[in-house]
Amino acid sequence: MSHTTTDEPVRKASGATVPVLAFAGIAVAVMQTLLVPVIKDLPQLLDTTPSNATWVMTSTLLSGAVATPIMGRLGDLFGKRRMLIVSLSVMVVGALISAFSDALLPVIVGRTLQGFAMGAIPLGIGLMRDMLPRERLGSAMALMSSSIGVGGGLALPAAALVAQHTDWHALFYGAAGLGLLAIALTLLVVPESPLRAKGSFDLPGALGLAAGLVLFLLPITKGSDWGWSSGTTLGLFAAAAVVLLLWGLMELRVAAPLVDLRTTARREVLLTNLASIMVGVSFYVISLVLPQLLQLPSETGYGLGQSMVVAGLCVAPLGLTMMFTAPVYARLSARYGPRTTLIIGLLIIGVGYGGGLGLMSAAWQTIVTSVLIGAGIGLAYSSLPALIIGAVPASETGAANGLNTLMRSIGTSVSSAVIGMVLADTATDVGGVALPTMQGFRVSFLIAAAAVAIGLALAFFLPRRTPAAGVTQLRASSEEEANLVRAEQALVGAGEEQPHGFRGRVLAADGVPVARAKVTLIDRHGRQAGATLSAGDGSYALAVPARGPYVLAARAAGHGPLAHSATHGGDRPVDLDLSLPGETVPA
Image (cartoon, rainbow, N blue to C red):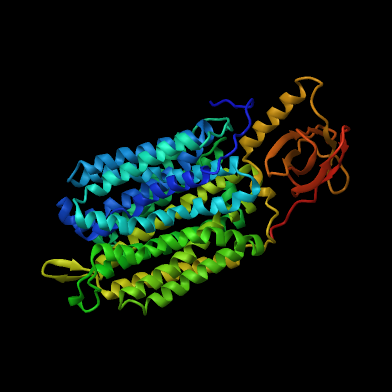
């Protein structure tokens, strides 16, 4: 059981906080594509079969999918900064285990630990939400969200350079160094959020989710070896369905679940999460296909015969473009809303893959494809947190964003397994070596294009929203809000010296008083300055720290949310009744 810290305010972020959190996200995301430049050599390097070698990649993605909601919940309970440092430390340990081994099993163990650090992404978003003012939050979250792709894209040329000129184990030493640097910078620059959730960690939920994901992804990875209609493959899929169903039923009965499935079932959240899976699938395809196409010898008739380093440099624009789309996203989203930005991003990805089918005969063509797809994925990834935050009540933003990051991780995991299977099934044998074929590359691009088309269909069904004023982005999760309520109540009970503020009643649309409505005070910098619950007669009182403009946000079950602008300019309390609209109906 955790306790609440109420006697210190949320510390302000310095100018270096966002870059450091984004760097931590990039360092973690590097793990996803760290071994792509040597993927074709892994069977020889580890003295194993190609199908077993795929686990070196899949294990990282799988553990990342499992870690995302687990680390998010642990961050709520014990501190987001603390869990971010734990995530990075686990990654460093995993990198060192892999660095000292030439055998398959220890490398897989190390890679699994490296993947577990993917929980750093939602932890970083959570820290930003706790500390940043409204005007900086949108672009900062976009940068953190797209760091998954930025790290993956930038890792390719760097990893290729290392692998071509030194022993491949140096990749892991470099990863460990990145992790240590990220830990040091986080300790120096990033303040801890004092906000804590009350409750306990849902261990059965974590184990159930892990078991279900493993049972689901194992037959996807091994289906081509075992046979898609074999008893083993079908049995594992059936087992996955049973385990995930039982897990879901259990999560619905737990007071503090690992994943809030009731939130997930809402139309906007469900569609955004399904679209997220499709974006995850489309991102990983290009990372797997283009480096192999570029490095295949030109004697094959379709390979481009480039060195490992040149191949990495040709794909690097994927990550660089994603980095530069974060500020572009902030402007587009502010004007048109995140739904439109997601649709634009998916359209650009679709054009990239469609054009890429015919742009496979020269290195410069792969650069064009990388730039286009990178720009599209950057816009799409950046839109997802804002869509989630705008679609759920303030009390559920933390849980909902953690689940959204999990969906993206599942998308990349499925993509890795499916594309690996397609390339293996269409490979041709040349001198005892299985080489990917152009047919395999084209089928992979078509799969990505199909994923984009599904994502677009889902995005079009998202309700149209005018760009929000940003108030919803400032609201904390239910635990954080409860902490502020307790802090406000403690202030009210501390004596008569509190400054004047706002007072009045919270009323329903028909004028009936609303009890236990949550009223949150937001100052001109976008920070929460206080919160309280309305009394049985609907009355509320909120002290203000200083004169000036404020926003009072009110919310209650069965009513739509309200955000009301008001100014406190004198020594007397401002009387202000808040009238809540009726129950909101999804558009």
